Picture 1 (cartoon, helix red, strand yellow):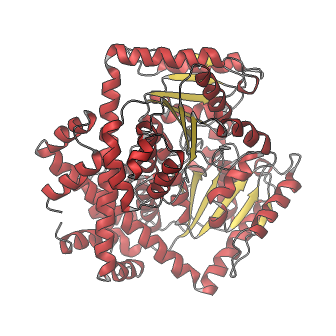
Picture 2 (tube, chains in turn cyan, orange; picture 1 turned 30 degrees about the vertical axis):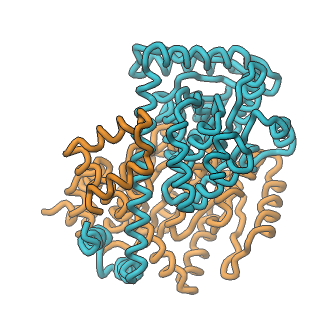
Picture 3 (spheres, chains in turn blue, brown; picture 1 turned 60 degrees about the horizontal axis):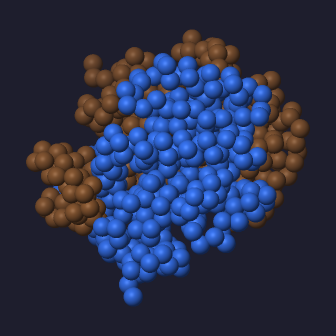
Length: 312
Length: 312
């Protein structure tokens, strides 16, 4: 049986193997992904982002449990270097997460956040497609909301959740920088801490100042994820956003954006790979770098020269 | 007078204008950068990275003051959304930084962390080259050490400083994920807080576990940047690393790595831009995205098809 057929049947080992092939950039991965693509587009994709220490993993964990109670199957993709899934976590967190590893309805995969030739966003998108084709109904993507790549990742979700905590001070400002526009739902986690209401008020003020969206006003949920407080409400908020997307026909719009992003990432990866292969094969790359390092040639002209030689 | 000549003469307005041209991707920027490139390679480039709230900006500010005392001219590139330079800061931080804005020997530039077609690393490298050609002797690049792009940025510095603070817990683990290998110097800032010695011990333990480097053992400095404590020692540590690089001939090696990185970034940007222009011009892009969104075509085959049509 082909690996893509086994993935479609929900075979956990086949999924894990295909994801490894993707991460290592093996060509077999692409042919399997081609075969799986027609079966994607079914899952509901939820992006969860926020600064380190905001409790994204605990939230994801609790949301997973909540959706499992309603029988939904779950995929989790962690691209957060501070996530317990990815390895950066204290022991208690890790143990908490392990309860799902015994549940066949939950598939968890962490992604290395560095070293992807085609970029993290491309690899993450590929993995989401694997989980989607394997029949996972809800897919959570957890990222740290600071870097550019991480924001790109979350942008392609159907519902983007931005998590913050009381008393971060500057970090609220940091969120403002680029994440405000992508948030469909805000969560103030650790809301038993002092200043939770102030944080909610600040978020509201920021939204009032922002460009505004005619179709959807992002709700703000207060949670204490570690105590399971506010999780049911948040899960309902996610479902409400899903219903809104379907109703307004916006889900198709997001689908198109997702397709657009995936296509561009693939294009960039493929082209760069081909160019570098050609360059390495004939020794041009080595020579060019040497000339740039010695200031005999500027890198801007070098690229022009290189593309001309490559007949591009 | 050409903009590149004015930049070389240290004209602040010309520098600011050229950097804006770079950020907006104008072709004039490239021709100016070509003209300036032979005059780069003189500056000493220091990358400063660490989690949000670790006090990177205050450290940069204090190091700037310290190097100014010794008559060195300084360039600062802030690609950190939580940096006061970039805009995400409380008022006190902003005012503190402003003292340098009156000093002609210091040029500060913040970078938008999103929306760069060729990636943040490419734009930052271009800006560093501008400051370098303008005669700035020491250039600080400040980034948040979480995202992939941000790490790429710091990687091209001559000296990479990784900042942490006591009591971050998980975040030490996060640092481990990818930053450990790039650190030439560690700083435990806010070292008047409880647990500073424990953090130092943890860093030492991490280094002992790591791959190890035969040529340089990264020192760990304790600082209280806001009180100007430990700054003189840290500045000396930077100079010591600089001396080491020159002595061991490693500086040339870093120069080569920098050239390599810059070339690849430029190549990727240029190729993608050209392909997209061609695709947009003949309407292929629009059609292709539509077919992918409708699952009539998988994006992997779409890229193959597209490249074939583009004659690549």
